[in-house]
Image (cartoon, rainbow, N blue to C red):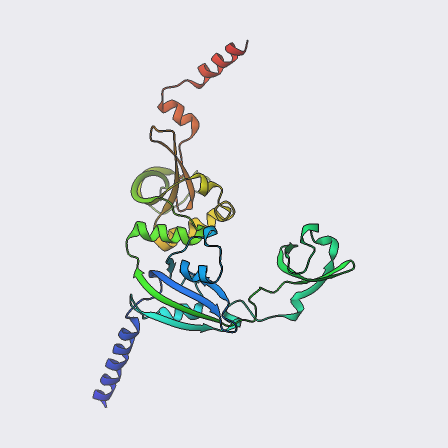
Length: 314
């Protein structure tokens, strides 16, 4: 009986080890893929420029190439992600994603009648894409002063066939950071990692453990190391819509995915190599020196500058 129990345990352990082999949650991979609707074969997305050209897509307006994703972070359809688990670099897969798990089932109640006046004049025609009260839809018909607008996703109700190939597992930290940023913002940025020593104020704990309620808490300045991801700022970054609207969320994701303490976006001004760092969310630290501290470091008297300016104006 004992031997049978030990055999069962050994088999379970072997099964667990087998399941843990291959790519798993948290791994960063580069994928090549093409997704089409099952009915009709309409192109949904692809990393292959030739496939896009063959389907009449304007490839000059888009960039094509392998996509970097983090497994377990919902960067692709969950069904596809599940199929990748356990795979190795070079493996291929073919997954059919049901409509409910892709772009949702088609909902007749999402086709609604609205006043024609709510639609901009240039978009008052069947087939026009419109944004009304925070919802995106397309115009079906316009009769009199009323319009029928379908607010379903254009691919709602469509099953999607997803063909992919695992091209590479990304392990280099900088390449991993660049790939994740490109996935989030659709742009390439220069990044690098540094371990910085910074000063922080920490609460001093009482030695005897007795705290006087009326006494002020005591702090001390200590030096701590911060694992920092530096991102070089570019004009394209400052104008990026995703960046402007969600930089704090992006920073939080990056600090978690890359296991770092903070992120600093650094802008280079002129050719002297003088950087202007700015903290972008993340953990700990302020990003950049205070103006008065900077003047002190440069041995500049702010009051003298003001007096000179006022004298020049007189």
